[in-house]
Length: 90
Image (cartoon, rainbow, N blue to C red; front, side):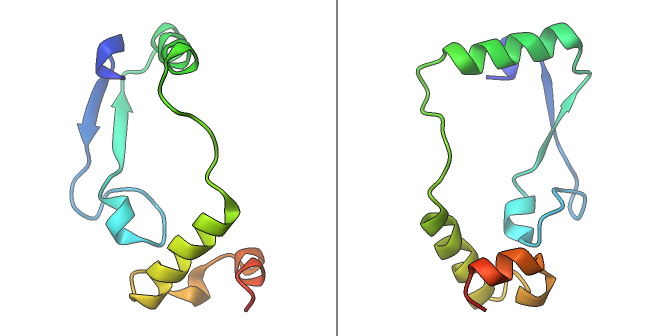
């Protein structure tokens, strides 16, 4: 959708991706470059009026995905926010 609104999307270099604890997820990070107010408005309007599914993921799914990431060693449990660890039951 960003390219439909004339927004330049750039991949970031190795090690420069997102800032999550999951480095696999960080590789999916993209920068929206030269994003003006008009382009941002058009992007938001496009998202809000599209027939793409939007919404939140259920908390139980998030817990499952984080547990899998911790279990596989992609995420260090001790680096998670304390409040999240409490929600995970630890």
